[in-house]
Image (tube, rainbow, N blue to C red; front, top):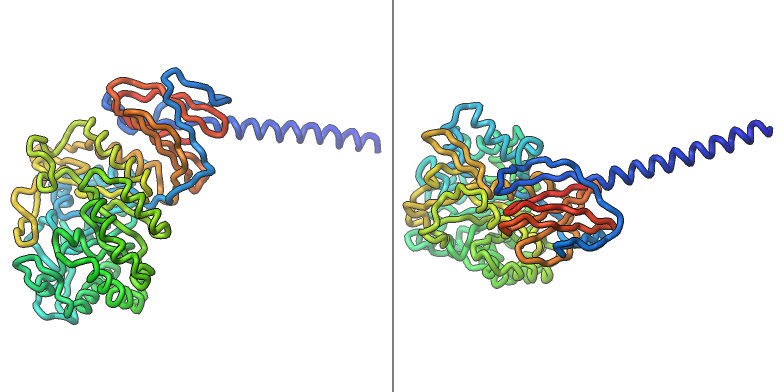
Amino acid sequence: MRILAGQQKTWNVVSLALILLALCCAQARAQTVQIYVSSEAGDRLAAKPAVRFAPGSGAVASGLKFQINEGVTYQRISGFGASFMEAGLMVINTLPPEQQEAVLRAMFDPQQGAGFTAMKTPIAGTDFMSAGPFYSYDPVPGDVQMKHFSIARDLRPNGLITYIKRARRYGQFVLQAPMDYPPDWMLVNPDTNQDVNPKYYDALARYYLRYLQDYEKNGVFIDYLSLFNEPDVYTKIPYKEITVLLRDHVAPLLQKSGLKTKLMLSEAPDRDDASTNYPVLMDDPGARKDVAVMPYHGYDFKEYSKIGDLHRRYPDVPLWMTEVCYAYEAGTPKTFALPQYEFADGDFWGQQIFSDLENYASAWIYWNAVLDEKGGPWSVSYVHGNPDPNIQHPVVIINRKTHQVTYTGLYYYLAHFSKFVRPGAVRIETAGNYSGVRAISFKTPQGKVVSELMNSRQEDVDVALVANGRTLSLKLPAVSITTAIW
């Protein structure tokens, strides 16, 4: 018995040592931090040597210290991306086949590219649905039963369903679909962009439903239907009428159909408009119960706090920033060359992404994903608000003559979020406010922490991240974005 007891004691000591060794190894692994950098100096989503946290929360010489608190959480992230448009696939299709696939991989593959996770797909005609004239899915006047409804154009080689399916070879993403205009015959006066005629509300609800059903029959599920794109700017339907349309016509029909598509409110052209007009619908209990997301556009490039105010007023409904771009028609100065090739331009877009996320946006979606060297091709239809020219800036620029592909600064700043801050991540508290240097952090569903750090200064800066009583020292290159993951 004494021998057995001695053996037991020996095994207890060995077991304890193994446990301590395992804990030490686990702690060492937890302290290892992966670093990825894109910078004006030339790094592009470049993996850097891993670094480690050091014990304590001491000072950093520069004084730039960000305190991360995993115990304070904010919004859950739904995704990042851009918009499918005929113009984009038209331009991609001018490339040799291998280059076409390389572009799609760079946008949608989460390992080899940006891994976009939230995409916009417009309902019929808009300014960059450029493979033909402005169109609707049912142009036959008075066809309230949608007997002539057809999505045939979207199935063509340059069509949206073709584009979406090609993209899905490389990655998965949610789709949100807004509409600029219903069929012209549903308007009171299409020549002056008047309201939707209320007598066609049921017909318009059927139009939305057929769109969703026909896309699903062709292998594309639309996750979110957004009733109107910028209703103040294009179809001039007031929010009180959007409330009626959503509450009494669209939502009941979708529920009866059994489709799982969720409803978005509609898309205000800027944050101030959203702050002013969304309460018209959201304060109606019958309409609010069917609103899954409040999307808005970012064309004011300011007023971020008004989105934060909307969140505090309606904390149960996520907010998505679903459209923004450089465009002369949207106020970009004519002296500013479009499209933009310089990497440093990405810093501007990084500021937008940070500011929206800090004010509770759960998704961030740019407008054109791909355009050519001229910022086109664009669709022209003056009555629908689509002028000529309509030069804009995309995420990826393809020169149709030389086949040169340029991944813009915007691409890299957006990719740092889409690639590393995946859907389901939750924003966590990151304290620290410094001129030209920003940090924002997220907790992933797998339990990791992802911190995004921007240095807008023209010189390298030293910063410290403090988390759980430990300090991570980092050098941020001039004009750069850095991702730290542990």
